[in-house]
Length: 111
Picture 1: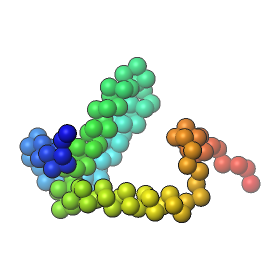
Picture 2 (picture 1 turned 90 degrees about the vertical axis):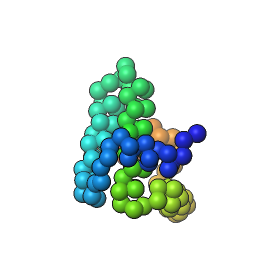
Picture 3 (picture 1 turned 135 degrees about the vertical axis):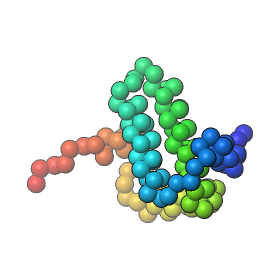
Picture 4 (picture 1 turned 180 degrees about the horizontal axis):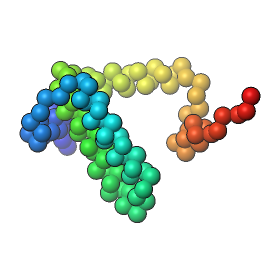
């Protein structure tokens, strides 16, 4: 099993860069766009491309945490705690992902 520290070190060895928050947000948008194109355009190769693009998002985010002086393990722990808190107080339905997507994508009703 690879640790977050190992993933961060591997990313730094590949890229040799130091990015600002603005540069990270722009790069994250590029990765998100790549992921969106996989979902939209490539049903035949979606599994392979999806694994690569999600992995790219994960590995890059771990590297970007280092650029900002953020411990990725602490960031994940804080995010999970916030998600638990949000779902405990949320009234939004928590059914299957397809149910959630269809609820979010539904056309708004006419007034």
